[in-house]
Length: 209
Image (tube, rainbow, N blue to C red):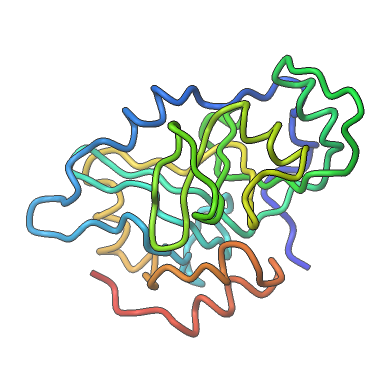
């Protein structure tokens, strides 16, 4: 089993969800980088030779990619489980009577106190943003309440932190063959054993852009 790049527990007691207004603002950017198609909605796969230990054998769902940079969520770095009641308490909500646990993930090294909820498209709120076919993102307290009450989405991945690139940075890493690309696959996002996600994604990789 591969270890995560972080060795201390996820700081759930200090965790917050990105306000919906900021989430929408972050995602509303030009869809394409000049001369290059957007990778939003696709998978970024760390090449075996990628030297950054924070991204060793990671698979990232790209949330946005434009002329001003890129943002993605690592989907194969589990951080453990927390009681749903504790997660609700962490965002200042009451969890009276709430039972069960929620599996949490390290979404990336940037702003690890900020939470993102990836989920299947059977669930929708005003704050929901569609990322790709059958994959959406909602960042609001209501979705955690809905998950706790059994009224949330069928499939869910809750991650804290994200991977971010400044303008032109990701393009430079692609040119150096640091990443492979694969089409979005909901099985990889939600269903497959996390220890198998990188290997499976590599089997479906395409050529670098």
